[in-house]
Image 1 (spheres, rainbow over the protein chains, first blue to last red):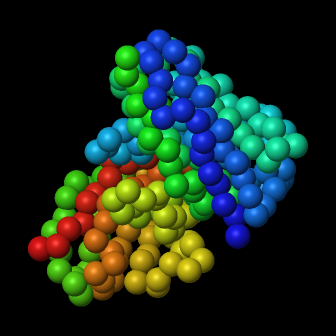
Image 2: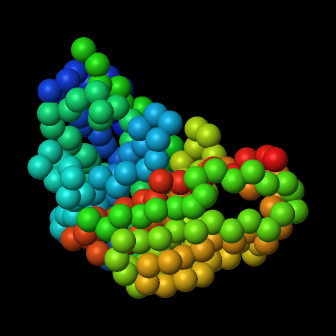
Length: 119
Length: 109
């Protein structure tokens, strides 16, 4: 059974870079039929897609976050990562990693990790 | 960006009720629309994709319909486990972003 697990600092200072990693187990990140995504949810708010990556390294970013987001993949470690630069308190959220098969919605999710932006 | 709206934002219902949630897109997304259920403190769960295809393991009381800009999620007979927040998401094109609706909270009447 596929499992995704987010990891990274739970506290980031304003103007710094948020860095998270998603480790995939029970399946290969090199699947030719899946995308891998980062999605966040601010406290008490709705869901926001941040971006996605294909195992080949092709990336797709939210137009509203594109200038600050980098998503990368490490197939040797079965991991993909998120970097969000110049964070503000508005970036405080639970960050989820998720898998999306071609033609489908996001069918497998990590448990989520809360990242707080505060000095 | 493609904007998504949902109605109602909150819905009070009883066990056994038929519940309908509407999702609208600001431009056509064809049938590239998914529905998720989320409970407090948990990750969302995929219910339906491609507007009307039931995800494996999801009870048949959930159904989806629509195409283009208007979509519905129907729960034929609400069960205690169904009280949650429901989100739609379009995935028509990465160039436009994969946007979620604002959510519909289904609570107990």
